[in-house]
Length: 179
Image (cartoon, rainbow, N blue to C red; front, side, top):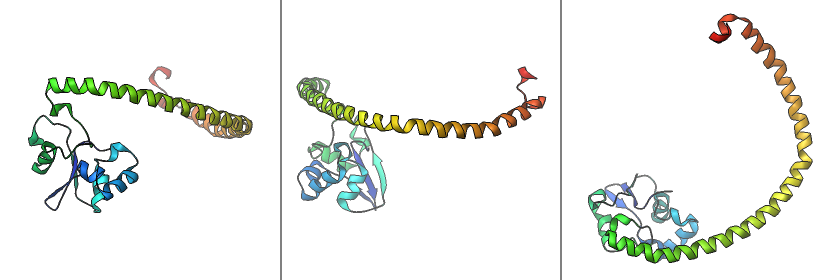
């Protein structure tokens, strides 16, 4: 997973995605299906897929303390709001604004957590049923596996034991406390 903001430097060009590219274009809708994860949308793979090219040098920066950390094209895109939907950084807001942001998003996070808990409960229900089926199969196969493993271990031990003790017999091979 790449970070917000990611870009690629290729042939003196700075190539990156904006929110408009990803969320309001036909190619961007296809990109969303291609990525299958929201976290991958601002990444290097998404950039290459969207613009259909290879090569270049991957770059990314998460230090928003100064615009000097970014190419001018990205600074312009951030300041004009073109990066909407691709990420957030508390370093872009004042402390007062971030506190307000936290207050507003706290409610949304609660709703997200409630939905997530319900989805996890459903997932666990399905997983428990599948796990029960797996355990049933495993219990049937385990005795045969154990029988084969014991036989293989016995064969291995026939080699391991004599080699170890033959080596131990030579005092030079022993740990100092065992000489």
